[in-house]
Image (tube, rainbow, N blue to C red; front, top):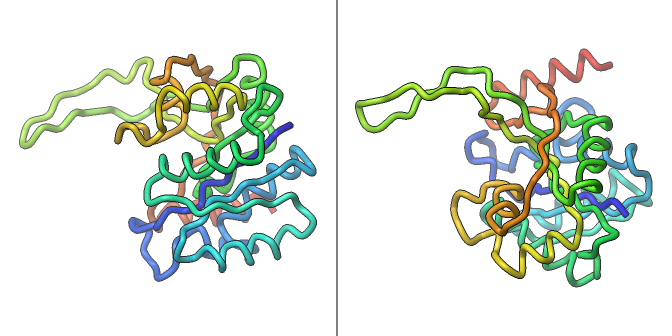
Length: 231
């Protein structure tokens, strides 16, 4: 079974606005709805677990339920950090008995609305083969490490920018969690970093430039333009 964990509990402080960005309407739908819609096209009938902020939990639950009538929807209260939301989802997955070898579970940022069906299928296929997989793209920009008023250039060869969804066998998640919490270190900013720190290898598959993360208002305008192109 394929399971989708939609991480939508962030505050969106860098984006601005009274309500977190995942609830803002991007074209015809709220931001958090796009990736869920694409996943359900790739895997109809599969469960979706949505992590929502406590302050907007009732609103978010009603919104997603209305947008996807008949879907297998499950909701958890997320944390104040990405890793805390991951752990909240893990508690739920363990409670319902889904942390098992036959299940493949993907974690995805709601702020990446333009993920494609092809990428979802590619990541799940890699996770089925290897146990853990994530998409990434080679870094194309020049890099520098800044230390106060000094800086130094860094080589970009072999450096890749990580995306989501990141998918894992349920048994890998369970074993990693028994060894190490995803909240154990501040540099665990994605599931792959935590899984690797727990002793498991993570396969990298080709990501997509359009699968970018909406962080700043300019990103919103780029996403709107891309959606208009897809129509």
